[in-house]
Length: 234
Image (cartoon, rainbow, N blue to C red; front, side):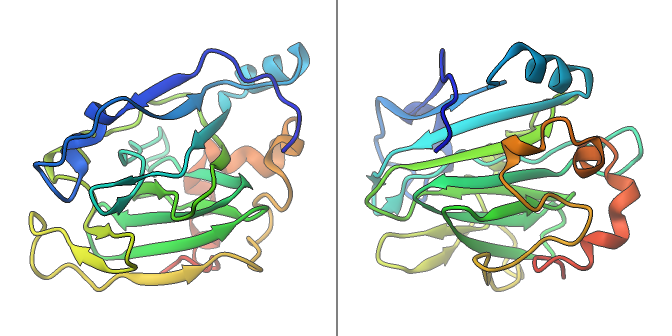
């Protein structure tokens, strides 16, 4: 992983994700994972990111199981941008491996994306997402996202998590709080895939200063047709 200053993390506690666990009686205490917001190597990068309303974050999720589930993030959606399309987000696996559990807000699609070190995962507009560390090693990932909004965690809290629960034995169970007709989960392998032009094609931090490659973060409507070329699109 590149040498970046990681200071003053936001720490997600077990109590904060208890509402999204498969087992409502599961007791989960103490710190779970670390989120470093607004990371940058120097003042020039910081100024460019701030002037373009973009944020570079790093998250570290240690290896852990919680009442038969792999450790996971809480899950959230993004609101609509001023152009009427929901904000997207892009992740890069820096160390380890990850599952990204995605679901459309209208529940017409649910997918689990498997990713390894070096993979880029673009979260399309309108998808909520949960990150899972399904390994015995620490997962470190970076993301680029617009800084013009706050994520919406409430739907995941109200529905006791995502549409599916992913267990350490490899099973995937539908969340009984959701409607019974939610679609079967799609399994997608991100390794070896490439995003269509002009979406990012290299390590995310290297894109700081590249306005064309990162324009989609704050102007998602302009890229509606391109999302159809993505491996995630349905």
